[in-house]
Length: 274
Ligand SMILES: C[S@@+](CC[C@H](N)C(=O)[O-])C[C@H]1O[C@@H](n2cnc3c(N)ncnc32)[C@H](O)[C@@H]1O
Image (cartoon, rainbow, N blue to C red; front, side, top):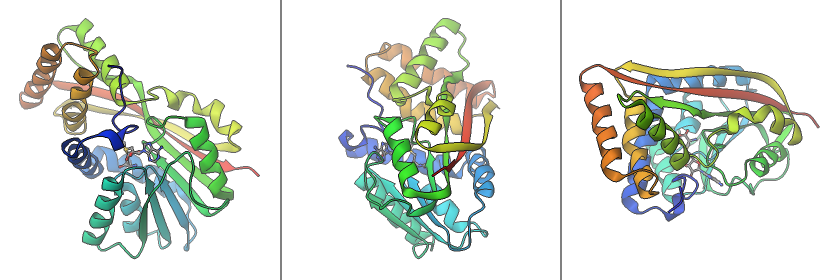
């Protein structure tokens, strides 16, 4: 069986897999490593007081809610995701956090957004573009629904750089490559954006990269490995016993303080030119 990105094909997953991903998205969003990455670009969005913001591929709405909690945000944020269970979870979490009046969540497809042109001041894709079927169509849709002069923000990993330490370097490399292919439809898309954004009518105004590195202890990469290593096996990319051994070694290294994992993440802020 070929690799099937669980986020691209989320509507084919069973209830257990959905619950696992909901837990992973929520844990990740609370991880200091991850909140720092979002806060860094959220600060630069320069949102007007009544800003209308769209997050495409909002999942459980963690980033949309994070925006609603910011003291410099007093507008409205809408999150769209293709998964109904994720959208329902997002609505529940927003009620629990008391931000329902500032956010709205809807089911929808990033390739065909159900909004008129120029509806939003800012449109965000936070770890979406690596998963979608057609990145160029999604970029064009994001450019269509942002107002002229408004900002499109794209954040994601360059998963060709994803790596975990493993004593057998050859197998470790095979596992890094398999994890990236099994989990992401477009593992290298972030290095294509300087070429793709202008074609979508978007001018890059700022771009930067950061490495997420965990040495000794693992938290961000812990739930990543636990959530997505089973997809390597399911896709038949590597033998099940070898993947299990890799996962056990990762867990042991987290317990005894010898863990190492790293991945590069990139942010692009782009302005709609016309
Ligand atoms: C890694 S999650 C990111 C969720 C959220 N942005 C966050 O950072 O917590 C990727 C999300 O993209 C959604 N997704 C993938 N393809 C999509 C599409 N074509 N339209 C809408 N959502 C999509 C998935 O359902 C999933 O919720």
